[in-house]
Every structure is written in structure tokens, then in C-alpha cells.
Length: 332
Image 1 (cartoon, rainbow, N blue to C red):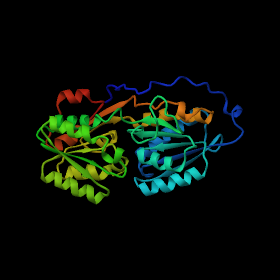
Image 2 (cartoon, helix red, strand yellow):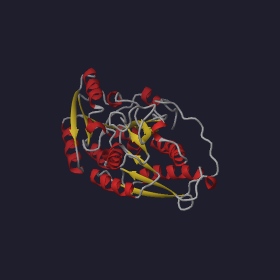
Image 3 (cartoon, rainbow, N blue to C red):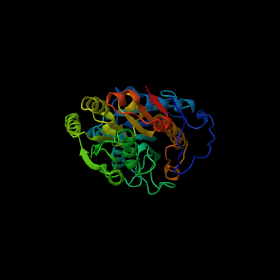
Image 4 (cartoon, one colour):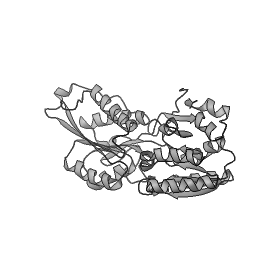
């Protein structure tokens, strides 16, 4: 059940934009490219793309009529991201939607002129995509999925509230795809671990086999697990969920609300569907002549805490009532 939205902002909302008939704006099909870091067969990530295209249609941009959209899916592979980035830039689109940090980095290497609107980027300034949040200053702007590195500690604090006996905890990520190679959230995670008298573990993984080995080890040590906000980890969340259940490891899927809905213990992060929808007005404005350098980077405005009580019971854990009351969704 949904109970509230967490409201945060980096640059505030954008002003309303007048929308004259597209027929009066252009005499050609506009071209939009989309590079998704995710698996094409994942219904959750396909839903985010559907949200994006549906919102475009409401503004008059219909595939095959007023615009053409080219979509590529990288399935968590950095090599595929780079290959598809080059391929899409060669199509010379009017604007590109880039989903996640490594995707945006791949596209940035290929073009400094084609406008890029990113989504699901944790640290756009630190990654070198923009000069600043209010005025990005180049050909890239977009929407962050995290309002600061402090979330690295927040996730651990929430895990500790459900699993108070855990004394060791790992943070898992792929250094090839995680923000800052995994460093962005690490300091806050380690500081929170120290304050909670826990031993932090850094777990770098690049395959399902490595995920399985790490979680098996955590199970033997009766340790907990934080899954970093990382596109590779999102693609491989199924492996994490099944292995955490098999090895009795309490785990939080950092920025993936679907983690708890699909059988994980809990998740806390931004609403990805909302972020994809909010990117549409920026794409629309750029197609009508706006300069991305003048469109401020924006923070998420909706966060979701999802707790799977059924999974907690299977792990022998009790979810505190106060935490259930804070949750946006409780899965019984």
C-alpha cells in the first residue's frame, strides 16, 4: 500500500513550456535515440520505456508519424553500451535518451554536440557529464536517481533496523558500471557501518558466478548485504534475490523498488517510472529548439520504501511496526 511520496529537489521544477502544433514546428520526422542499460526481456524495464513513449505521444510525438525512435538494449554489458552508443550517434538523432551512468559515459565519448538527456545517473557532476546542476553547460542534462552519496549509509541503517543481529555487512557492485567505479557510495556506507558497530565488506562482482560465491560466503558468516545502485546489479537482481533466500542473507536492494516486490527483503529508492516520465518534457523542449546546457539537472521527487514481510519471516526476522508504518508498500 502506498502511503506517501518523499519530496526532494536539486533545481526545482521547470517552467511550463508552450506547445504549438507539431505540424507547425517541423516538416520532417524528428529522430530520437534511446540507449537502455537493461535487458530487453525484463518487463519492468520495458515498462519504463513504455512510460517514456506514452508521455511523448501525449505531447504529439508519435513513432512513425512525427518522429522516429531507435532503441538499443545493452543488458548490463559495458561493451554493448559502447557499441550501441557509436551506432546510435552515427544515426545523427536530434536527441538521445541515456539510461544510467555507464550508458551516458559511452555516449559522451561519441559526441559533444548531439543533445543527451540522461536518467538514473547518481552523480552527474562527479562523472563529468555536467559542469553544474543549475546550468549543465554542455550537450548533456537530465534527471538523477539519487539525492546524494549519503544514501550509501541510509540503506545500511534500514537493513540494520530489520536485521539488528547482523555484525558484518557487504556492499555489492560491479566496478565497471557502478557510479564512480563503486566509490560514490562507499564512504557513507563505511561511516554508517562504523557508527552501527558493524564490519563493512566491499564486494566487487562482474558475473552471476561471482554474485553466487559472495552471497554463499555471506551466508556462512551470517552477514548482511546492500546492493548498490548499479545497472549491472539491477539486471542481475534475480540472482541476488534467489541466492540471498537460499543462503539466508538479509539484503536491501538499494535503489530498486522492484527488488522487494520480486522477493527481496526490502528496497528504498526513487520511482524509476516517474523519472522516465519527467524526462519527456526535456526531450520535447530540445526537439523544439531548447539548449540542454540551459536545462537544469533535476533530482528525484518520488521515493519508495518497499518491505517484503513474507521474505522477512522466511529469514526469521521481524519487521518493526514503525518501519512498516514508514513504508510506501508492505508485501505480506
